[in-house]
Image (cartoon, rainbow, N blue to C red; front, top):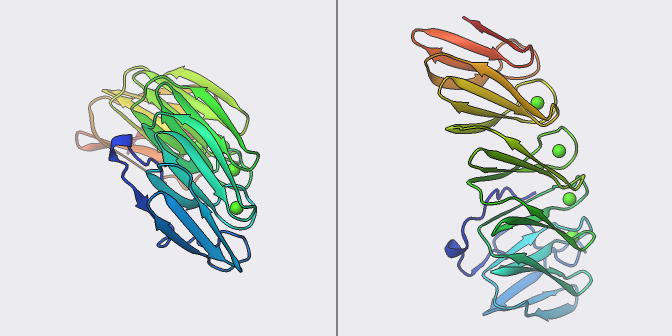
Length: 264
Ligand SMILES: [Ca+2]
Ligand SMILES: [Ca+2]
Ligand SMILES: [Ca+2]
Ligand SMILES: [Ca+2]
């Protein structure tokens, strides 16, 4: 899987050819690296006795990516409004409408082989599943946080999107999405707190600490008076990390797995 969480804003995208520098250069699936030559918007792939020229449009970004689970990486081309996937193994190109481009990433979202592409544009997120050549649009509104993490312990990462007090979670594996009221918050971070597989999302606002669990479909609420520093680590040796706060000269612990709080 590529470790690209968020590519960034459209305005930041400039024509970049990664194919010759990244690890995935076998494009026809024979296990041997192919040669990729970029000239303007045209890409020539040569290897295994075959040379083929692709012209996927005025692309701004090209990435080799394992998307379909079949041998050989695909070449993903992105431009404002659309994405094209070249499958050199089958000498085919698939194009997808992905809307305007405000943020994007790649991850296994459905638990099936290959990475999905997700693109946030306008008020939607479009997920492209090259394995079955489909795209699906999820409504999300605007957002300030977009990430892909496993929240439920089941195969495939969930997308989560935070828009002011709204937390939206997308399970592409089940083609489901939910909206939760996260309330006001000043920080949010993923931590595995409850010992069940999948990350929790820890929201803080003043003395209030709210832990979102997708498995429980909601928040667990804690109050920590006057804390000035929060960290998380394994403190009791049991599954799930504790949230550890500095409160004056003392240490305060939220043990979410046991649903307990205590001072040390
Ligand atoms: Ca492939
Ligand atoms: Ca997948
Ligand atoms: Ca999952
Ligand atoms: Ca968990």
